[in-house]
Length: 200
Image (cartoon, rainbow, N blue to C red; front, top):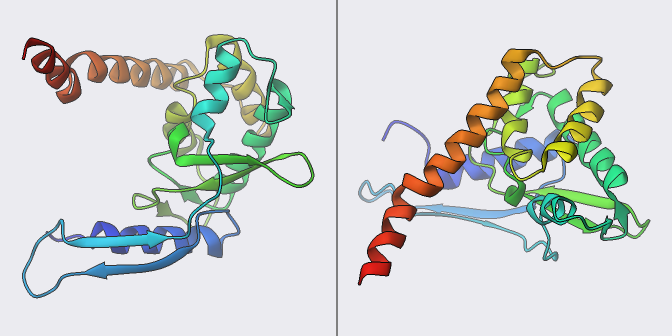
């Protein structure tokens, strides 16, 4: 009740990304109903991004053992993704919902991967590069679908660029998030609905 609507937060988040030179689905408009308070009566519209792929599919493909994704090998893809996220974090953007499904990916005209962010309503922006703790808080979501060897290679690239070695506390953050996802899948609302649906 005391926060801006989700529509306005998405509008602000996307524009903040674009101001900082980070690719995001271009905003078109947002609408709010002010006659009476209804937190669900607000809408955000962005331009359509013409790709069928996201980083979720990218990491899942390599986890299955595939050797390339949209023309890039695993090493090439993880290097390009790492560079994109390093740029975002280096420009002070804490995305706060950086799951693979929120990072769209396509093959650019130069053959390299291009990335675009969606679902931008939770962003916090700072006037300096993010500390490691906030970077890790973002990356735990991005890395969730990666297999162990792929995750290690990706994090080596990302953290190597910062000349930082993950502490045991950082590594614990990844393990705790993995556990949270499994618990939510098995015991959360969707799991309960699946059980109830199977009994009906």
